[in-house]
Image 1: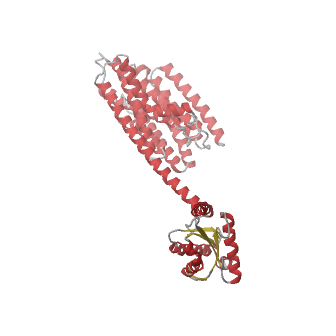
Image 2: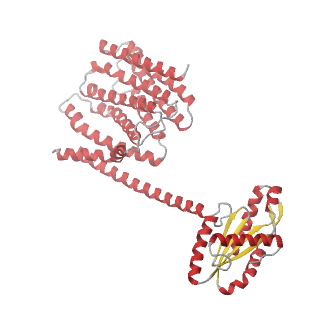
Image 3: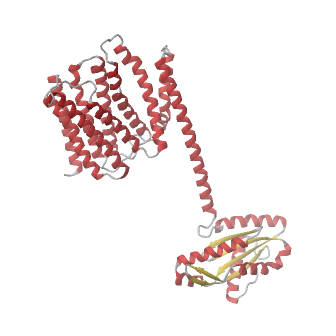
Length: 490
């Protein structure tokens, strides 16, 4: 069956399934075999769909959906155990039992999946800190204004059960906040529909867990327990649909992280919790132990977050510095030989000529060419030719002295500039001869013996030319004269 059609059918089936379960829950107001079966059937179907998704996924995406599938499997096991108490063992399910271990596992597995999905350890820590700051803020405020007033004076409240059941909404809200941070950061690794259904599933868990906490644990409205089950069934189906949509190519992010408003909101996330506390204290909220602990925790987390941000900025600046240095090097030097490239050599030679003109000095340019280099390339290949150029360049580098700059002009052409005092002009032939003699005429490269020689032409500023282009051109012409005549002359 085509993937899009299968996804559409599952979506319609999920809507009908949840609608029927919600109708039965409101109609019966107590658990029946049918409701227990539907509670098990929803995660069972979702698990089978996710197994299909896993077989199609690769890399980190596959790991993510494997963990999600295991979480759904834990949900299935927990629902099976919960239903078995009445329909198999004919006994009332305990407040805290074996089923809760699998529900806890499911909740934490979803968190682990989100953590694994993040690209780097720094990104994971930053996202979790932002989520933790929001979570602490809302948890403390909810405790002070919702939970505590609800149980105040209630002698029948089981605080151990309440504390254990708080794990569910806490982890659900944390998962939701992580997804919100993903959206604010322009999440691109998920198809937008997959991300929406993933968020929808976790939102269903948030509503289901919070309703169970307030209606069942705090107010003991056990007759409404069946009304909550459709939220968990919806969550399972949403995860399955998210998995199917993830098989489509990733689309543009739901929120574009490049817009000004989204950037402001993203950078404001760590401070929203702090602003909530400041607003409460401004409104006259007393600083009791719970609020003080929450405020202290938020300040510490924000401090850690800012230190991490500064360290990341410092690291990025260092990487940028190295990248700029590398790009500057690549722009100035020949990648094969490590000598100056033509552009940089001509720029430096222009400066040398300007300075020499002011001081009434001379500048010599020596233009070198490897004899019969084309034959070497044809006989031994371009790789051997490159090795020969590198070997010649290495010897030229060793022969450089103060006032000399050496460059590769391209192919087998090398150029040397010399800021020459007047007394050196008569020794240019000698200097060129020393350079030629300093470069071996016989090289052994990868088992091949290469015999080569150099031809050189010389031009002097301002005697032969008054600008860079003409000076290099004159040296090049003299090099070809030397190549034909077997000698060189200025």
